[in-house]
Image (tube, rainbow, N blue to C red; front, side, top):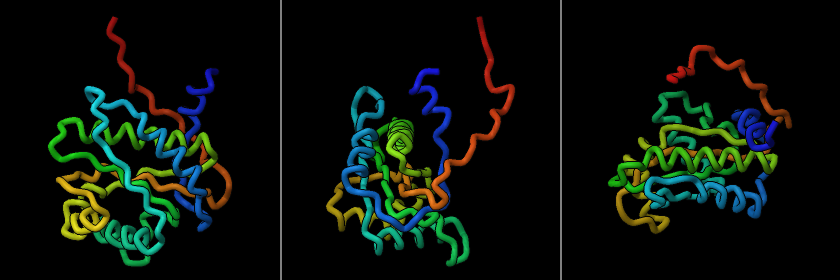
Length: 176
């Protein structure tokens, strides 16, 4: 089987991480792959905010947990030490599609480099809040941004990739 197709079929989300930090050069390779995602009209509008600061990472986890409605002892980031936040301009009609492609590239690149990843939702709600808007101002981002999602990164706790569930039948229709 083609190696790219094999990689697409075997990448899985990881939901339990070691606390060990991913080296910056690996994070940068993953980010670079995300920046090469397809985008509407080739506009390349989504941006990536890389968070490796533990205090901010933990604050994001708390906010995400509050939005999700879970108890304070839940970590919706599963212990991952790196959070890549994908944002896109609110006025860009393709923001969700383009940002989703970025996250897909980030996850595939992470897997190719032996790093676990998982897409975490609730970024839209985070960055619609006063807390999120203030965070973006604090890091120097101007304008109106929509949170598309978070791609968490880290070393899987058990060093094993989950197995793929069987694919559900009846999801393809052919019109010839």
